[in-house]
Image (cartoon, rainbow, N blue to C red; front, top):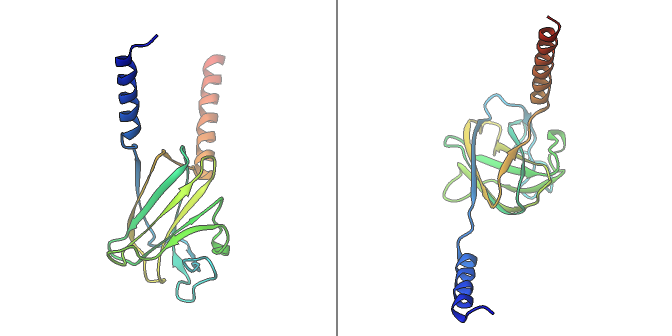
Length: 180
């Protein structure tokens, strides 16, 4: 039989643990849309393609998350009118209205910052697209993603090819060494 003091202490500890703030994970990356590929961006609600935002340079960031839950996205381009889009499971610049999850043009206090909150799931591929409001809006930017889990970058196919080439080279070196 447990003592009332032990039960009370255990209850107090459990209550404090439940009241402790959740730990957020913050992931920040930088990029530049200058000279990037271009596309005709969608409207903020993905209902159609913008007549103003045609031939906009963009940058993509592909990722997954380790924990499902609410995430925040904030992008700042200090010299241009940023516009961000979240797509899942993939982004196709030739079909910018397909697979849209969320988007934002201007987050207060000004036009150089865009952001939104979105609930994400584990095991799902996401692409965050950073662009500008109009074709002349481009430049360096910084994006911060915050949420309950770790943001994992999805490598590009060229990264896998480079890894395979390196692994083949190590294998050939080891084979030569064993034959000598």
